[in-house]
Length: 92
Image (cartoon, rainbow, N blue to C red; front, side):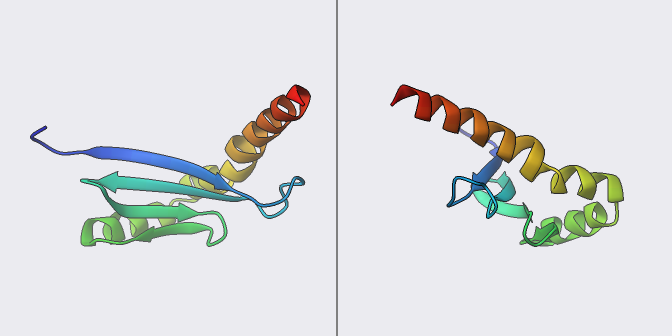
């Protein structure tokens, strides 16, 4: 299709059942290129393009935005992983 493509992908990565190593990654994508990424291990936004660097700098200065993203590992990842894990284990 002609035009522009924008998406946002949030993902959770972990390797143990106690979720102690869980990482929350939030990608902002424009035309299939990640231009801003939040990684809970880093704890702030990183920009990969001029526009991304500009916005990452603005968002990193806002404690409310950072607090919300940093909480993502608990509010988004762990909560959903626990539900998924219990569903899978109950099927066995």
